[in-house]
Length: 202
Image (cartoon, rainbow, N blue to C red; front, side, top):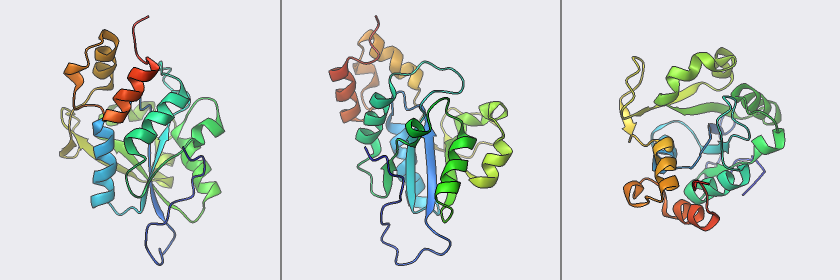
């Protein structure tokens, strides 16, 4: 895992205005195939040079998460192999409760040449009223909203991502039912979970 959030060389000779970086934050508890597809789709069709995958350190809505280091490692296994994609531990360095405004403000201050975008799934649209100063977030890093199957929000774009529920994945893992989630988790992520005994019922 790379704590440095300096973009990798995208192969462009010059990037007017600086590198265009899409921030893809989330619990990633665990990272699943819809997360992988979101990164690949954004790199394929959106005007970005790199995707920065940022697992939260402590969830702002007090959701229970497996340890940060495990989620960081799973993100690296799931998405770190994708060209022009970097997994960052910046939220661990910032510490405390993870807030998107704090993250994008920090990245803007540290890398003023970056052109920031915020990559989100359409499933978060219903939660935006709960976000702290989303208006300011959108000013710093205009959102790229990825449509997701099963999301019925009025302003949701057409679905390009499958419906995969992290909650259902965790429930299946807790039951030891790996068959029902076959194809929903990257193989290396499932292996990591099994080796570490994550999400088991205690």
